[in-house]
Image (cartoon, rainbow over all chains, first blue to last red; front, side, top):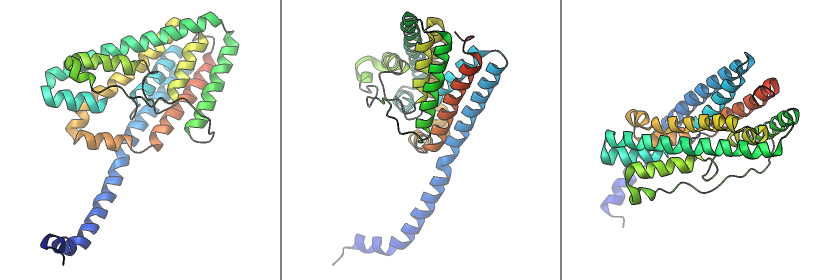
Length: 77
Length: 198
């Protein structure tokens, strides 16, 4: 015989699963966003670095690339 | 480290102590990263590799690392499992432990680094054999690591830091892509200006 709590959980089971699915979907959508924004920012700095090197400033270019490699080391350390 | 200094120091001791810890972290990072870069350049200078050959070697290494980063070439790369020691905080307080964390992480060689692009930079430092170039490259890398930690309060303001860090670190594709771009840039810049950057 299930206790009261178990029965309540059982009744809430279906809506809870539906809610979890909605929250999970929203989280997935949100999850990609900041990483993509940061990665695109990094790619822009790298493009600037290549441009600087192409214009005869190779040290500036290498320094900018090195900066991005350090800056976007999420998950390291 | 972004997940350590900000939640541990800022929440426990406030913004002022966080600033001190962040400054100490920055000093430690710049000290070790610049030293490692200069030391690698100095070691490379002992080899006295011909500039043309050095450029070919750097481009080859960058290309191989790039292919590995995007998953095309399954070459093994050294990835340390060690992470910096969180318990240092208990021994020396926020600023001292942040300085130690900076020394550890800025060196690049003693803690876990997820992306292969760092190896491209280290190869560049070593093969071109210039202590000054090595110091500039690794100081720039260290500056990037500092900016990463300084962004902690900004993320904290946006939402819970743990959730924000999770949101940033979980998706792997954007990160591997941007580090692959970095390796491509290293190869291109070396190809165009190999002699100049020496």
